[in-house]
Every structure is written in structure tokens, then in C-alpha cells.
Length: 259
Image 1: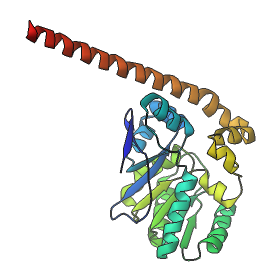
Image 2 (image 1 turned 45 degrees about the horizontal axis):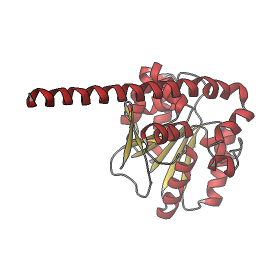
Image 3 (image 1 turned 180 degrees about the vertical axis):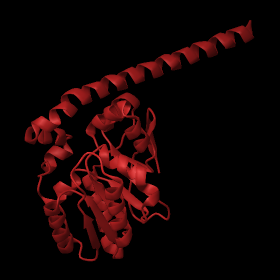
Image 4 (image 1 turned 90 degrees about the vertical axis):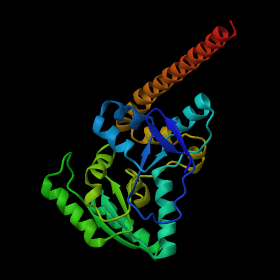
């Protein structure tokens, strides 16, 4: 799998889900906001670093790679990953489990799945809506997943909670594919509309979401994204300075040998 190194993260450039892995695989996504949050949250950073697959779910990641490092790849959102996995599970009559969201959202997902992917067996569990879970609550979630024995586990608790939860409990979960896909639950259920295809195509999904949810989205777009860009520019400058210093040292060494 070809990856792009963005500081300490190895981001998958052209990921395709076309078979169930034989070992445990955690799939997470990263965007400028999550990068900035993880820069100050060691537990979140560790969770992202431990990802077996880390997808570029943010046009800021894609554009930064293209203009600063001349790497070309496309955004792969959690919604796209979800669709890719469901298509494969339907083809092999597989199973999946949704952990997170409300009973209403989970019911809508189940109904839609039965219609669009009739060969998939689906299980769901809605955890308590709180910041931290008790040991018993965590165990109840794990027991529900393991009892169902899904081929794929989808977790939708919003970042960074979902990534941290998976990282903490992955060894206790008996499934080989675990995906933290956040807002995809609401998008697929239809309780929250996704941006029109033309906005997604032109990298404007962030604008659509900010117009719909300004109170929730303004910080990530107006603070985190500029902060991310400045960090990337500084990283690029440091890289150029190190390269220039290495070249100068090599030239000086060559001169000394000639003399």
C-alpha cells in the first residue's frame, strides 16, 4: 500500500478495500482539524499513529501534499470508505456492526441497509451519550460486538473519542476490521445531509458543512485549518533548510578532498 509521510503519519494514497484482512486492521481518517487536535492530545496522536490504514479525509491534506510535496492523490472520506466496504460485504454475504449514534439513526441505517445491501447481516448498539464510559459500559459494548461476530465494525462516536476508544479496546474486540467513521452514520441514515456532489468534487464540502453547522464547524475551518497550513509551511521550510545544509556540507567535503 503506497503511503505519503506527513510528519509522523503515514497516509494511504490510493486505498481500496477489496478483501477482508486476515489480521486486525484499524482504519482511521485524518484531516487538518484532527491533525491539529492530535498535535496537543497525546492519546489521540497515539491512536492515529497506531492506525493500520490512515485515510486523507480532508481536502487540506490533499492540497498540502500536492503543492508543498508534489504528491498527487485524492481525498477518501469516511463516507466513501463505508460505501466501499458495504459493496464488498454484500458481494460475500458478510456482516457489519454499528457502534454509536442514537437508536433513531441506527434504525434508519438498518432499514436502508436491508434495502440497498440485502446480503449483509447487520448489528447495532447505541452507547450512552457521555464523554467517558464506565468499565461496565465499555464491557457491554465489547460483549455486544463479540456476540454478533461481525466481519467489520463501524464506530461513530465523533473524533477523537472514537479513535481513542478503538485504540484502547482493539485487543478485546473479535473482528478483523474496525473503522472510525464519525459523521458517516448520520450521512448514511439521512439525518444530516451531505454536500452536493459538485461541491465534493471541487473540494468545498467543508464550506457546505460550515454553512449548515456554523457553531460546530467554524473553529475547525477558521482556526484549525490556518494553523495546519502554517505548520506545514514551517515544516517545508525546515526541510528545505536541512537539504541546503546537507548540500553545502557535501560540497565542502568535496572541496577538502580535492585540495
